[in-house]
Image (cartoon, rainbow, N blue to C red; front, side, top):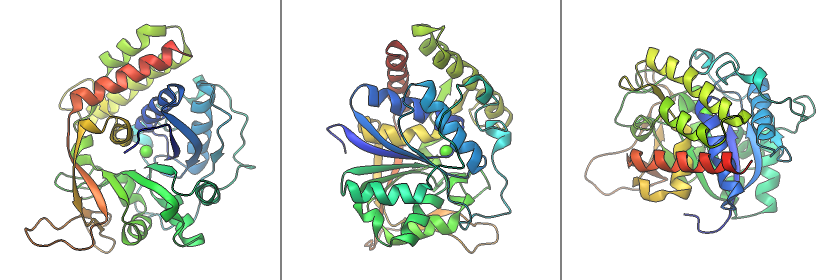
Length: 329
Ligand SMILES: [Ca+2]
């Protein structure tokens, strides 16, 4: 848990829910609770080029564009039988709103690769950096391959991913972030024990509604961030409804934001310690996350797995912090 200003690297593939995690984290940074050391973008919801551009645009939107953005490692072990998530998040990953955001200065072609940034920053601040991983784990696995054991230098690795006792969202058995690059996930879960995982089991209860977006925007309704929040939420709510994700509520699941709830509002979550394993061989179950639920002595526990969420208070925390962001831009 974090009690002072914490150093964070955000590993992300925006993504509608990534955007809400992004804006929430920037609010926490403005409140002096967090320091964003770097953003490491990665291929996932949409291509590496687009997730890089979106990360830069989101930072620029909030006047945080002095934060370095890494470009996603290409040629990991990503599956080619899974399409990206453009149908959920818009073809640009941002609800087809990227043209409304400011043009960034950072260029994909000249950007450093995300794994190199991870390695450099972890060596620079050993034991201090929390990696918030809200995308396929391709960059983390690449850093591990390039510099084995490097992630031991992270204070903690907080991952949105997996589905244990509920259906997946990319297949019946698997969640997108893990299933997109299951070999990368397996590498990380087999090697490290300071992992925290926020699975669909709890994120499926975190519905950010259009009403909440409007409530946030009222603080500073003319500002581009307010208009972006409203428009993105509306777009995401539309696809969430089409995919029956929100029990009929006009909103969408802000999966990735759960990582920040753990770090800054841990009272909203309950965890169990477990040995999480990643299925990489199954014909129908590739990318499935498992733990042994039988009542016997557990060995090899590697992760804290979130099992329950107080979604009312978690959502209230997001709303209040987004309001802070809009009141202080
Ligand atoms: Ca994501």
